[in-house]
Length: 170
Ligand SMILES: [Zn+2]
Image 1: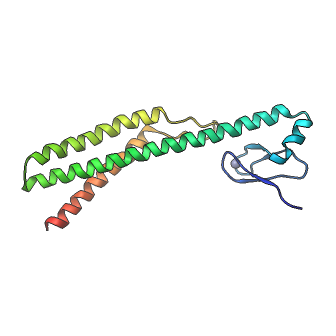
Image 2 (image 1 turned 90 degrees about the horizontal axis):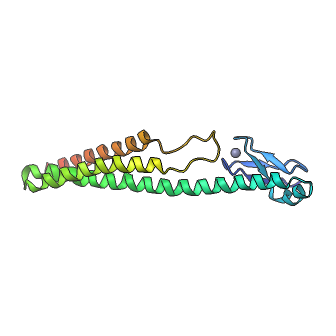
Image 3 (image 1 turned 60 degrees about the vertical axis):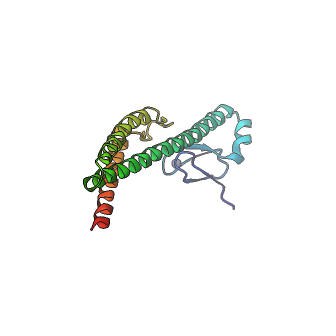
């Protein structure tokens, strides 16, 4: 007997089809699925509404995953910009001590810009984070998490530029 299975739309685990059953339940997250091969049979058996409900749920999950991936991409971009601004800004500030004073203004502007940019964009990003389909899925986009991670990156890159400066000025 060949085992028919479908990927759970919610967590991605394989849900195996038990003999002659139209619907299956994911053993990991409890998400209900309709097997593609069983769709026509289930509809004939008068379960058209259930099949369409499950299809709707499946599409909603797919859409959520796409939106979340796009959101995570934007978040990564925020971290990257914060890191680069902080790195360059701190490097300018430390360089200014033995060369021109003009660097310090650029450096401080960049560091403050990175900090305020991070704060503002974190707030915006968390507001437009897509909501999960199921209530039991933890919602992403906590402000403290996004801002906190960005802040660690900001400090980390500043520290990195200090190390690089120390190596090259030794
Ligand atoms: Zn699952």
